[in-house]
Each structure stands twice: as structure tokens, then as C-alpha cells.
Length: 192
Image (cartoon, rainbow, N blue to C red):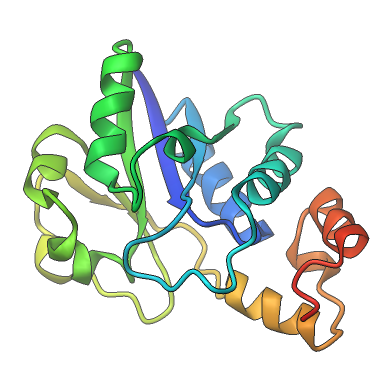
């Protein structure tokens, strides 16, 4: 079984923090690949500042195209909305039986994990690799046998910060992959 990390997110936009974490987990963990699963709509977030699906997918593709161990996935675009992680995991497990899918999650998400649809099934059938996030807390799942913590670099970079900075005409070039930064400038994303 090929261990494959699933990094879910809106990636609005994808930034260097996402890539650093994914690279850490394939370099220092046991993952062979990381798939960046672009979520069309997070059930816990508002949609108003979300770029169209195809724009976010294109930026993720630009960000990962030079790394053979990374893949952009638009699988959730074809699924019922809002998308739920358990449904995506079930579909991927059926479609790719030779892969062991592992959920990648920030420590700031773990305390609310009990609110996810069928979280018990996720924990029963999948491992969850947790990376540190500012204001993160492992909560009740810290001792679960399928939850594994990694001492990845603690990065306080957020897509929200980047969108606000672009809107305020700040230079964010080193927070984004070069191609993504240039594409945002060319398309005038997040300026309003």
C-alpha cells in the first residue's frame, strides 16, 4: 500500500507554508506522495472570498508541478456540496485500492474534529498526521492510536493574511511560490 497524504484545503491561495509542510511530511515521515485536495466549499467556512474552483486548482497545479511527489486533486469538485472528508476518503479508497490514504491536519483543527461528519469512521479506517499550528491544541484525540503528531516547522502563514495583504497592496512574493505570485498579479486576484 502506497502511503499517500491528503492535504485538504481551499488553497485560496496555496502558499509556501502548505508546500513546506507537505515537503516535510514526505521527507521526514513515511509518505510517498502528498495530494493537495482543493475543497470547493468547507462546511465550516463562509464562501464570499473564495475564488472559483478552476482558479484555485490552477494555482495549486502551478505550485506543485515541479515536485513529482506532489499532486493537485480536483476530486471534490465532482462530488456533492458541501464536501465532507469521509465521502472523499471513501471514494478515493474505492478508486485507488493500492493506496493507504492518510489525512493531514493542523493541530488547530483537531479540537473540532468531533464535529466532522462520521469522524469515528475516519479514525477507524485512516491515520491522521497532525502538524503544529499556532493556537493549535491536540484535544481529546491526542492519544488516539491513529493520530500521529509531527514536529514539523511551526508556520504562521495563512491564506487569509495573504488575501488581506494583496488587497492592501503589500508585497507578498516570498509567501507564495513564484508562479502563483505572478499569476495572482496577472489576474488581479484578491485586490478588492
